Image (cartoon, rainbow, N blue to C red; front, side):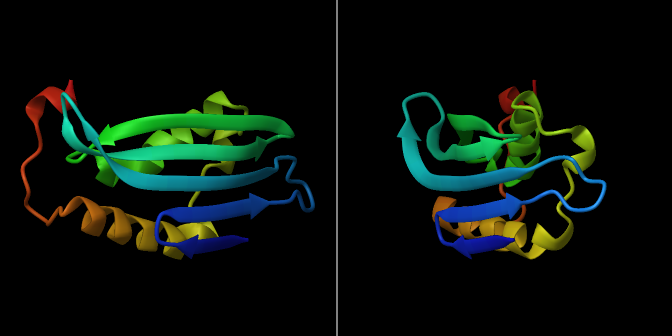
Length: 120
């Protein structure tokens, strides 16, 4: 199950059949000003993964925020979600909407430059 509204995505998975993982997460995001990187997207993961509380905030620079799904997935693995559970699957349309919203909030367009220092 997933829901989307600008600035917030809620995703939930309850184990079925042989699946043994569960999560109930809210992903909040908003534009913030960073003294070093300028406009950034700040994310907050709040909820549960495998019955354990998750409450983590992190920022991504404007030119890196397009890669939010990878960053969120990596963080959820650290919080106990199995790598095999990381797949957009039926939630893909919500991530697409989130991607579009993030790009609009940050004022990014295809072809905008990426800071090479962010690639290191």
